Length: 521
Image: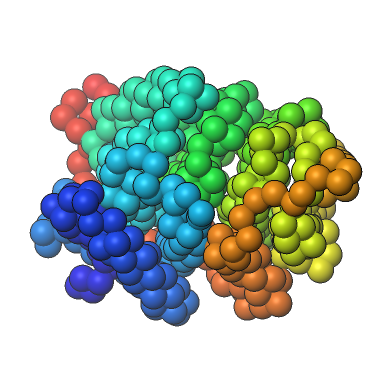
């Protein structure tokens, strides 16, 4: 087995444990270990992308226990893509956290270990081949995120954190109910095994499977912040420290990833009576998410709240493509996923630098003092805004064009196109208004405020540069995304890699009390 497949989970787990042992009195060591860990994850992710580009699905059986009885990690093109996006954003976010004039990691306790444990949960969720372990890694990253959200203290963070915790605990309870229902009917939670067994479920048990699938859709919708389950996100992301909010840009993508992996494969077109059970619900929810997200951005009183609502709008656009349940649309969605994650993270980091240079006004959308480095900050803000809106020539325009083309043949194509274009236009209006208020509507004669150092601008600049590179190399990235989408549709290849002989796996008996054809006596 390729033991390095477990490295994206083991590296942050071991580094986080080492940080706890080293203690908080050595901040220099903690920062060095954190940066080294994130840099290592970038290299590991690059190796994973290169290794998976051949199309081979690589399983890793923990303890050498065979699937579906043991824990299995699976590296395919989609998992490698998610690992790469997470590693790049994590490195930039951590660099921003330690490069501020008042470093964020010094404003509370255990910032660096929590950061590493959240990366462990994120990477584990992308690699796991088992539905229950997806729940476990969800909980690992959520527990770390609860603490990171409160890092730096303050009443706003406490109020937002309380709502965030309650909503996600409720979602976790529903996750367990959905998992229990599936296991009671199929006798397995291995994703490859589920993909083979769900189509064989008897008509008597099909309603239970559909109920479990819809429960899981609700859970993943909460994680992705899809309508009507998105109201927790704007306040939480706006209250969080900017580097934490940048890392949280990945949290919604975990929910989208889970929808793609579970509802696109296990409950996909070949799932028998549970086929595409999410389709009637996902498409309308995606359209509403995009529209309400951009309306919230227009009404936002602060730049950070606007960035949070634009995160919601980007999730809606992404889910529109996912909800088409076609290979072409999914390939476009994966390209847009990489772009929107980078753009949202960059915008949160730029907003922090703007707020630090506006004195007591902060990031509120009102008249403030002139800023040091206003020209450079303005250019960076424009680049991040253009990327997120989807204007040419950056990757957002390329991604949205791909989504529009891939959905052109759908029955509701007119509605989809209208929503995507309207959301883009309203996002442009909102960000233009915000930019004019922040950079042009300044107090006459006031002395420019804020730090004069450039170190805090390196991280957002690097993320913007990654977005530009994504546009420059759009063709190979799109080919990879399309190949990842086609690989997801090849259930046989995945099952062969994980289970060995899928024909033999398909004949394994169902749980006690269920006949071989899946029907209960």
